[in-house]
Length: 299
Image 1 (tube, rainbow, N blue to C red):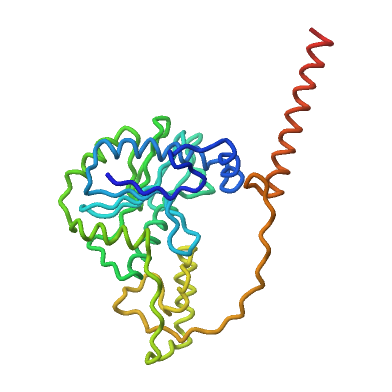
Image 2 (image 1 turned 60 degrees about the horizontal axis):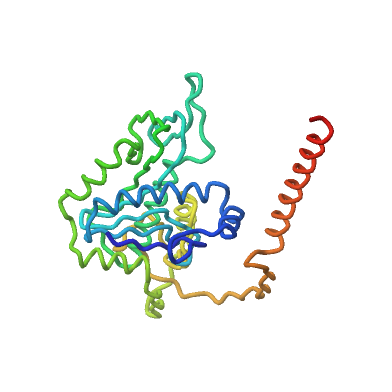
């Protein structure tokens, strides 16, 4: 299996230095490093069971958007967007509802992994369609657990859920599925994702899009909470097929905002990041001094 890793702050050998780990935690949150570890466990399983007909793209940012997709598996059986979770505990997935079960009652989680995975899958589909890629079976969203301590009670969830004890069977089934596209199509899709072509200039012969189409664009964007660059120029909601999209508008001239000077960095870290590390270090020193004084005075 071919692996294309777009994860930031990772060394050439796949390792993450202590400095980069701190930077990644400050920039992406405390779950960043555990998420990468969970992804790596899944990748190791995929590598053992999938052949060269499959390509796995890791942590790809789609074009110039801010949408980062954890894992995109592309092979002759189709395309899967996989969100790997390291959560533990008891959860319930009913339709599009996601939450924890405590005392027999359901508590909605602040982050709905079902909807998030579905939106990531939709983002990949829309992105490929806008790059003139025809998908025979669409893009399948999959929530995959790698932690045996996680139990999910599923009632017709909107996406496919794979538990930790079924990962091996899931990967083996992918290798045996009937192909729906050729290897050439797989390479074309991978190339469109990793090295997208620049957008075509709008044709002057096309008529301007009616004003009422702008509202449909906004509605489509709010529905999935993201928008690609140039989505307003298409004049169509993200759900609209390529064949029925209205023509391009004539691009408007927009004044460029003033270029902000990049903040000075030291060891690749900004002043705010260094300040946070300094505060954490000072707190650690105070704790050590307190422990030493306690040991000297009372022990």
